[in-house]
Image (tube, rainbow, N blue to C red; front, side, top):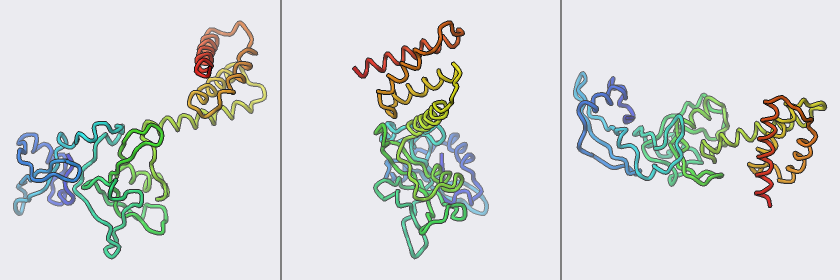
Length: 256
């Protein structure tokens, strides 16, 4: 459960409120936000007087519209409700990210930015929102989370011009492809490759062909390299070679 902005000021943490609600469930919905998520009014007794805060219970936070979204291993699948929903106000110095227009922003999910930790920009970003995206590679919907943006722009030092165009699954795959290509280029330029290095290079090459980075004409080149390997290899190398031949034949069949 996440709480509305400012609720911590009353001395109540999100965990405390969640434990209270678990023991005394809220049954009355006070409002529905723009994402179709129900919000509740809950009265907490704390000095010097009763505080009424707006909270969203985690078990209600998954609107049906987000069940098909790609799940992020750290941030989850549905929006992370904070209750903060600022609008651009140049006079009030509220600046929202250009890649988060109103149509893609998820209301009540904003978190404040630390401008001192952002890379220099003509216009800073004062708040990050959870925003809906369609993955460039797989076409599946995903959320570029406000917390993830804060990590990108304040911890990793990414420029505010950087945007997230792939879901986390495809990003990891893309990173793996990049590593495979870098390793292939490194091994390709080794003058006297060992058998293990040759097998690793072939493995990288076939993976790059499979992912569409290399053209399938590279298969002929790999076939010639594998044929030049001597017989009587050690058992582990022989097993690896057999698997590479199977992969190469499968790729050639797909190409026929």
